[in-house]
Length: 327
Image (cartoon, rainbow, N blue to C red):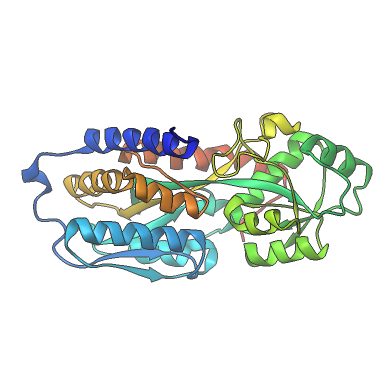
């Protein structure tokens, strides 16, 4: 009997193989890359989902290329330190940025990040995506998003939101604006701190990554209200989607991809994208990503560029209405 997991991996693998085949170039154009060690710059500290996923991808690409692929963590300034490092690197494809979803919104939070994501970097491919989950402290007497909205409207002075990062902050602000609730943001320096605050009751609600929240959801230390998506996540199918939980239209996720310095040769750019698609199509690789709470995915450079553009544009009005100003 074929399990749901096996069916999903089979479907995803075929889709990724098709994508990688579409990206394939003649062997002559692909020859010669890489000629040295490739560095993946991760703009976050070691240990998070982006770092772990990047190490898996680096390991796979090293095997395929027969060259070392090293991970270099450069956290700080909302990811701009790592991004600036890659923007200033040689445009030969040997230095790549592990790009978070927040790359497109960085100018909404920083006046001068030191680089322009649209002109100083060039998209290669998406390689993973994951879901957020809206959770509350178990003492909050609600069980879905609709009940939370009603509760937050009735108790505006006692509901606090644990905020971290620009992408999840914007997604929650969008939810709050659409539903007419105004929880005060309590800012933390990372997701782990937000989850600890939620468990302790310092804040009542938080929008975090599913992968980060999953251990605490399973132990009952926090309570899931729903995932901001049209459909349930294959990673946690027991959690309702936002559309099921009473907040239709609340859709947001996070992803990781690869970008290179502007000016990287087109054949190198497409070779990297094709190779990423090929290694991610393997069922065992998809299972490794699923174990992290992520879905292995891939795209053409053009599709990834469109995704970044979409993220750049979709949150502008939300930031304006929420009073977010670049610092």
